[in-house]
Image (cartoon, rainbow, N blue to C red; front, side, top):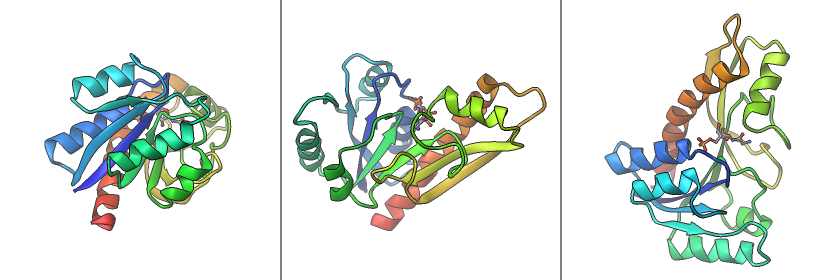
Length: 193
Ligand code: GAR
């Protein structure tokens, strides 16, 4: 059973975190959500984690000791795999190096298209529609020191229908994200077992 830490952002709904934590809890994947780390207390994601009885730690991104605090928290919880879920800032390089090939992110588009700095949340779906794409989806990829740049692990696709809006696309893609992230963590659980 691998031990997973989920890092959420301050504005996230926490839906990917909740999908992963629920899959761990129901035993449908061989993983345990050992820790959720949030930059802020009381966010939607934190409340959802608490409701799922997952331990939560609040660590501020902007604190000088952030990299060290994060490394200590991950070591203390004996984490095997880190999952970013709505975490919108770059991870400190020391953490990326310490957990090489053990950090995943989910992105709401088919990378390598529609990734990079500024491409997050609804901005991504607006860009996909504006580009006249016929399909979109989500990508789970390994994290390095550049936004949305690491190797792909898993993707799921959906067609873009006539009259599709960024909002309707976001909804469809979010449903795919929950499935894709759970499958990706199971792939990693098998690899790391
Ligand atoms: C998700 O759609 C995720 O793909 C996106 O933030 C949302 C978080 O939602 N991440 C990015 O855009 C990263 N570049 P959630 O808080 O409900 O999981």
